[in-house]
Length: 273
Image (cartoon, rainbow, N blue to C red; front, side, top):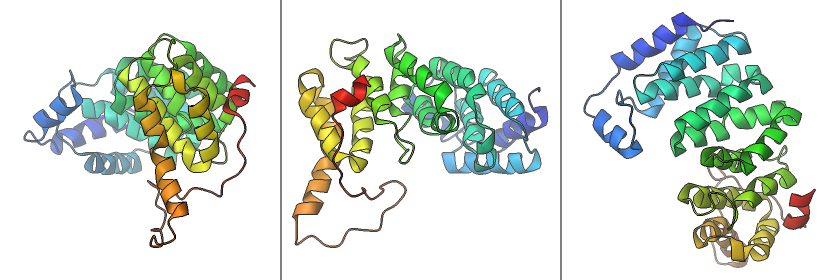
């Protein structure tokens, strides 16, 4: 199937219509972007994408992939790349995400090569494709984690950060171990920070597991990684030990309540399975 040119035209026209020249320079500077910005904030841009999709429905994965790829590759402004990613996170299109999307996601990560793009892809379409087609995606994440590209490594270690029931602990640690001290890109800020973030998210579900990993590999983890990883554990410890503390707030999507603690597998054994 070919790209949906009507949808592409609607998205581009909408971004132009909502452009804000006062916002654009600061947005470009913040992202250190070679591409200029239209100056359209994220909530406004996502509403635009939802409206365009309602007017131009996409019904098959090939059209979705081709449309997103064309928006991405022909982008003249950074929001045109963002709106391509908005299509891939749209609730009405989630059922179309499958293993056939992997080459597109990989190319976007490599070409985008910055945290805003990589973190959106790893947390949204990549995570959904992983759940939909684990047999196809897991070997690719292992390959990315051992490869030369820094951003593919970061995407591999962060791909499961929003998963709970479908979380694969052995795979998770296999994506971290190649980037420990002595590994390629181990000193890169976005690897050290990303690894700490991934471990922190895992700590909500498996605090003992993350503590064990930090103890076992402490001499190969950067202080930044350890600090990020243990932030959640410190908060959990305070909550569990302070009898005078007020009742916790209701969990939110951004800060889910940790499940009951359970005996965790050894991280080293998990990573070697």
